[in-house]
Image 1: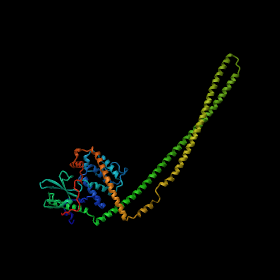
Image 2: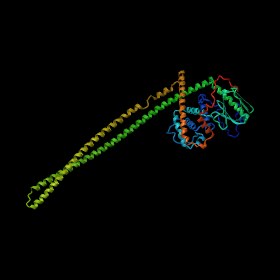
Image 3: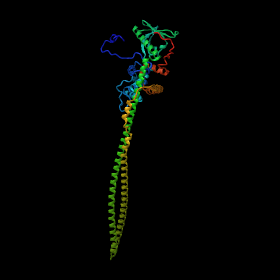
Image 4: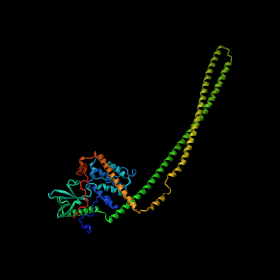
Length: 513
């Protein structure tokens, strides 16, 4: 730390790019990354290593990690804002995963968005922590690889991580051939290019290997010392400074949680008020439409009634005219009968005229009767039309009375007028956390752990479901060696944790390095 930056072995060309990275990886990110800024920077580092394929990640886990990265960047999913194609310019999946399947960018976005929508309500720091909790279970997470040779000259890889030292085959960086947990190593030393690992159990042979350069041995030893020191400190009680930092972090987390809950309540009240307003507006529009339809029906009824009345009047006049003609025909017939016809021819002609007059009178009578019936029917129709007009007017009055009554109810569903006083009360909340508060918080944290275990089971089921779904689109010829090794490990039930022996009890002798 006391050496100038430019005195280190850095490139001479300008500009010189430096990456601020964590040298030692935490075993449990949720427990060890106390400050939010540390968590955010470490999240960016791990995400870049996964996208650059320095950490192997299976396809289905890559999709899940991408959904948490989107939640951390964009917040809650909103279909009105996050429309199709909004992830087109984002780098979310390793190129190896994209090339492995016959899937378009739209298909990948659809699957990422499906999981992204399920993360609703998570803040940025929570989404980033979920990302890290999944990433820390990947086989290559936190492992620094170095090319070495054993006594026989066989090329191997040495992996140094937070749990211990691991020996890998150069073609298989996922599953170690031999592992030495930190609590089972008695001594580590090097002389020139030869490195020696002495196990705590003296029955186990000493492991020796050669590295390429003396400088590499120094780096390996630095990583061993740092990781071993952190390994031992994690298994002891926290220092007072760390306890204070964690307490402050818990208080800050609780304060943010309360603030988020307050904002969520206010948002919920606002959304409920908006929904009530929209419902009232919809109901008002419906009543207006019903009133308009009732007015139109009333106008049609009035027009129909006027037409029927006019037609009935015309029919009555025609019936009177026909009755008058029938009476005149009857009089003519009586006059003809009374007239004396002297000759037989005149009598015959007169009889014929009488017959014709009788037939004409009969027709006139039938027509007069038909017209009278038609007039009666029109009068009945007029009466029914007036009754329909009366009912339409009555319905219009009922609708008008409803619309005038609705606004009075709307005032009861609007936001309470004392909402500002609610804000004042919120602003005067005390954030002094008592012992009871901290106990309650601890109980909530334990509850969250139980829920997380259940969610992990559900998460694994989701991952298996996605893997099955996209398996049909996989291009077998594009599988890398790491893909094949990962599938073999998964079929055997091997994971990162069950390939390394569990750390033994702390009662063992301390390690001398």
